[in-house]
Image 1 (cartoon, rainbow, N blue to C red):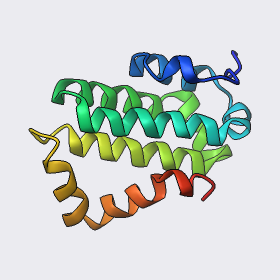
Image 2 (tube, rainbow, N blue to C red):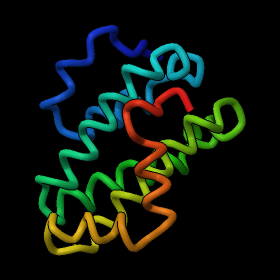
Image 3 (cartoon, rainbow, N blue to C red):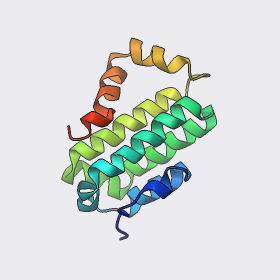
Image 4 (spheres, rainbow, N blue to C red):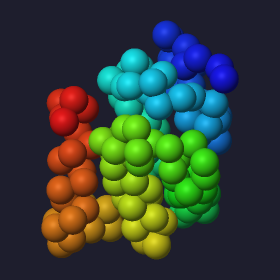
Length: 131
């Protein structure tokens, strides 16, 4: 299993699939050790995709993340690091919902109208990464 690199700046511009690749190769312990910096990266990439990505890109990211959540490593996270699994699941839910909308202007209305999404966005805020 590969370790999550100390410096994740190279992944900021990388395709979302490479970020998911990090997840697939990481152990729950590695995710715990790199929790803040890794989720800062995921947060940045997801919010960028929602703001700037096409529906196809957002849907593709949701599918990649969803497939990770149901694979062996993702299922192990439920047992060993439920808070990490929960944050990833919240990102998946946000991406899935965003992939059904035609424009970025719809995202604020999703957040405003859907209480569960509003809670997920608050949980995913960078200042709440330790929650």
